[in-house]
Amino acid sequence: MLDAAAQALSQMFSPPFRAVLLKSIGLALILIIIIGIGLHDLLAWLAGAGEGFAENALGPNAHAPLTVLAFVLTIAASLGIVVGSIFLMPAVTALVASFFVDDIARAVERSRYPGEPEGKPLPLARAAIEGVRTALLAVAVYLVALPFLLFAGFGAVIFFFCTAYILGREYFELAAMRYRPVAAARALRKRHQGTVFMAGLFIAAFVSIPIVNLATPLFGMAFMVHMHKRLSASAPAADRDSAQPSRHKL
Image (tube, rainbow, N blue to C red; front, side, top):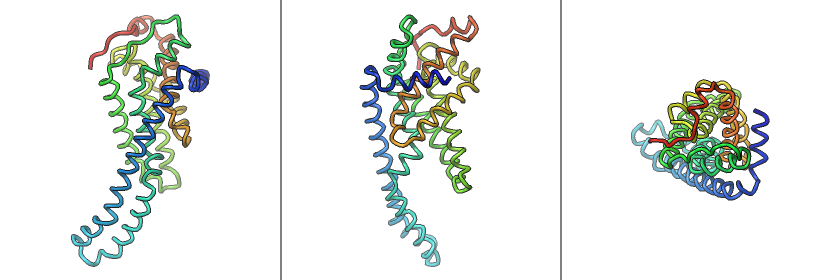
């Protein structure tokens, strides 16, 4: 596993990866800015028009607590982009990865596994479905974990392990789907769920590093291509036979 992570890191700035790196970083930045602006506008509305609406609904006795809440929301609105980039980066990178699955996986396969058959490209719709599903799941889990951030960092631990599970699952399944039907890819991930989760911890650590985490799609996908190769090589013969590249249906 350490060797697979080291190989993924060493490839990130190699010539085949540079164009994909720039495109994935650019798309991630655009999404983060859009999310940040959206959070800013929402919180600004809650601090302004929302306060007046709530006071009319709750009566004059609610003026003082609503004023305090409006002040807090005003501060939060000014930090919208920062908050979005920290808490939603795993979801954003999961979505970005779905657009570059084949570019990244193909570069890894051709440079490190030249004598083996290449995986079949995933249909864009299938990759997008997986990316959107993972992003929505990430947002839902993080919203549940967010209140626990108030308890001496306990929420940060939940956040980290949830990130490891969610991103480890997505990147491994995307790598496996280039060689297997969707159901078989998920079955393989479940069969090795402990190993995949441990690998996901590496990705969670990577996505926790500011600025560097913009390159998470490259690291995560390349890492899981290596992990899929290793787990497939150690699988029973019947399972390896089912891992031949094949076309996928949505």
